[in-house]
Image 1: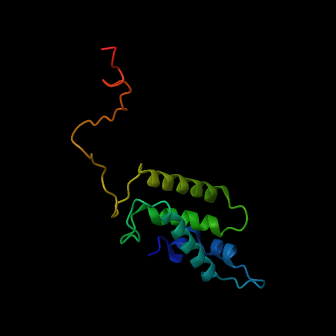
Image 2 (image 1 turned 90 degrees about the vertical axis):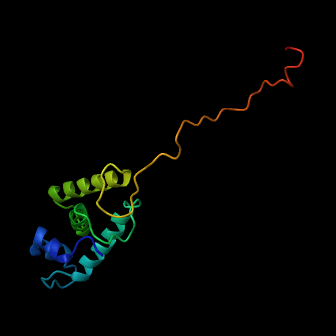
Image 3 (image 1 turned 60 degrees about the horizontal axis):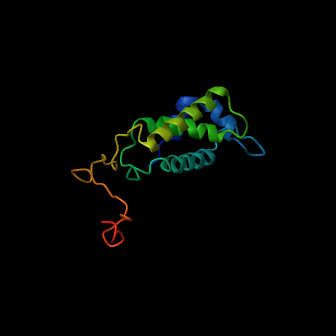
Length: 141
């Protein structure tokens, strides 16, 4: 299951921008190159999955922020040259949110994350071995 689709990218960024950044042939066709977009979306899915190590992958249901993050990352990666500042800022925000998800600061409504529990019911102290024993203090006691 992909996190974003060509239709979502077209709706969010417009067909003209997608034609501009994906029509890479020697002779421009004036259409969106779907192979380029699909490759970028697949790479974006793998990139995002790298941050979702605490979740059971593949996700059965894609939670809310992931499609938006995938769109921001994919459109940034589709640019061969410097994107405009808004796209760049959205990409940086997406990376920041992915880091927060990976660190557990932001929780997704998905399977796989267990709440941390305590392993025991009390305090456990491990002390070093005592250098002074009855055997080596013979004559002093």
